[in-house]
Length: 120
Image (cartoon, rainbow, N blue to C red; front, side, top):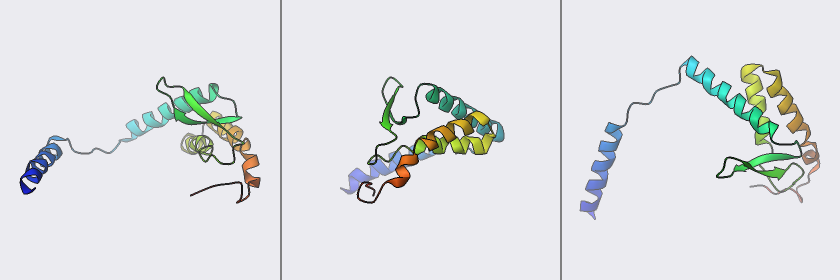
């Protein structure tokens, strides 16, 4: 058993030394990431109606969606939440508009009771 762990430890050490140092994003790179995210969120919104939210991505890049009235699902808030973050970072009125539209679509969830809402 000891002999098996030595090659694995050596491989891990070599792998960690071969990997380059971690680099933080500079301001320009961070701005690019935020801009790209905003473009992707706008493209996603253009292909959806506010009655559903993205849940998972299919292999072809399209979305599996979940109804915003589904009281058992739990992922519907991610899309409006991501748009609120983008609005906060960019001040983009379109990001705010998307956030407001999909947040309003979740209004019915505020009346869910503990017996109809499941959670962790």
